[in-house]
Image (cartoon, rainbow, N blue to C red; front, side, top):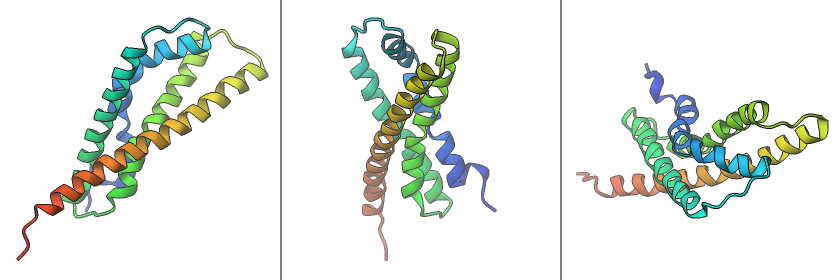
Length: 151
């Protein structure tokens, strides 16, 4: 019987929590500047947060792949991609919260505009973080299998 935390769907859904946690404060400032027409000046800090996102995403998906491989489940590829990409789902949920609690938008056109562009951004983020997670985990898996001694 598999443990609940070694199921690929569970790892895929929960894998984005820590990467989202590393960027959610900066998401407030980015969303405020973009949707509330404020100026955004701290691009250097945004780049630092992006680097932290990359590092945390790779580390989390390596742990997810390790759980899978330790449970003798070798389907780590899509699990790594989905675990990294699930960060975008949490960003979209934050965007829904931001829309209803922090913006003063109303009406069909503003709502469609907001959620349309947010969905496009989140899809791009899903592909980006999923790809970063897959590449980082692939390097890790290749390294650990390189050092295995077989008789």
